[in-house]
Image (cartoon, rainbow, N blue to C red; front, side, top):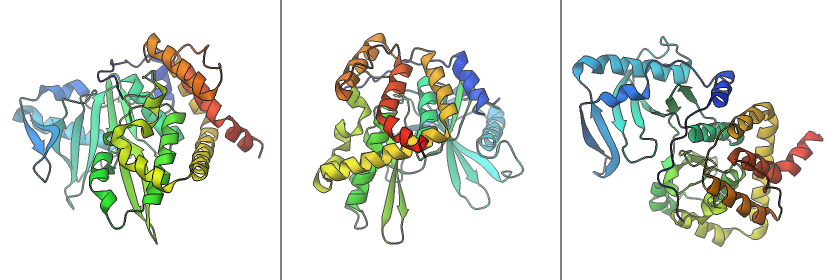
Length: 347
């Protein structure tokens, strides 16, 4: 399936900035994206098996390195503890990595606890509006809470922990503990979450799997980690992970273990859960959609194609008068969740 490999950068407009300020997503940061571009040397970073990670580790001049790392530790404290340095005074910045190949060209910062050598990551990126909308929709409508901050043209995100999907399909599905039925169920739910909120390009390397041991078995949660393709592409199938060849291993499991009846049941369950989250955050969601409607997030050609595809899928003409991706997302979401929200409202 063809995806726009170089989606244009979409700046944050005033309406979205007002939304971010209102909901405490905007804060003055001690360091900006551009401040990390002044490195003088880099070398490839390899994993423990000697394979390229596609990340480079950066080196800075001694005169700037110390201050830079202190500022990054302060930034981590803002993200995790609202700036309380006393709580995290035992942390330090160990490594700064950079990825040339991703659309967002992110920096990855490794933060280490000096008391026990435990570590965590955060990511610093250019603040693209599509990604911010994707992060916020994930926070509001999915079971996954997302921590991020924006200031001017800098976006800081927490690390989303889990096993990368492509690695999971190569190794973990052959584990004796792997529960095929439970994972197939989770993929159906993930597929539904992506389509309801129009998150595209969920190939296996754009999400992670969180594995939780249960008292009898394992539970699985699929978490998106790439939000650049939020409401951008024109083809409906881009927003359905089941159609990507990279996800074929789990699609085959679903075909083997899931019936039409159980698939519909899990889709219904997930829509009900999304509707509950929407009910809890309805005012905030309305503000977010208002911001989305205020700016151009895709090309007119892609908007026209998605309207046509969704009209056919829903057997309606309701999408015809949509003017932009914000309109389309709102219409698709209410089309899929209206019955579930109505039932909650009647309680």
